Amino acid sequence: MLPCLVMLIRAVRLDEYAEVGDLVVEVYSTLIPNLGDYANELRDVASRVDSGAEVWVAELDGQVAATVTYVPGPGPYAEWSDPLAAGIRMLAVAPAFQRRGIGEALVRACLDRARADGQQRVFLHTTQWMSDAQRLYMRMGFERAPELDWEPEPGVRLAAYRFPINKGF
Image (cartoon, rainbow, N blue to C red; front, top):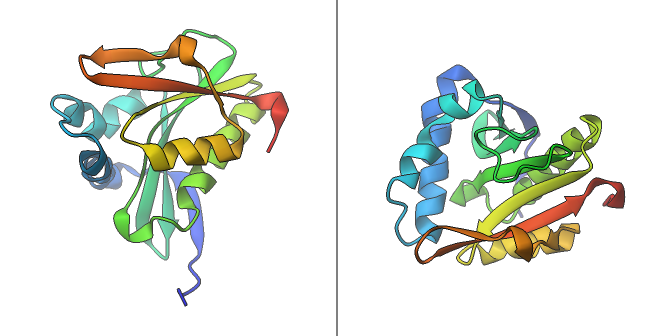
């Protein structure tokens, strides 16, 4: 039996930027065959925060176990142009903490925040290599939005998902 851990979802602290960036790169590099230059974007927590996106961590017993970037509306980190939508990006759970509901808790926190912000929808994109994430999103009530799919580079197809805020969970 696993020990009971106390989880706190909070904004990333400045002294954690490097750790959080490295966590996202570590997790994504196990899923995506070649991160290339995208690794630099994943590592760059400061730019996300400076742009108005919010980077959150899930802390368990004093350890950063996971992270997510909440994008409150259109801007540099938005992959959509809908002014009534927020977004979720760069969700990553450290391997030692996976399959404990931490990713789901971070997604729910983003949905709650979008609802509080008055947004009507939440968008996210995922890749063909992130099948566990796709199952999570579908289980939580996200809908596929294939009209928003795109290819940032050849061979990398980003599948779009949408969550209508009035749907609840």
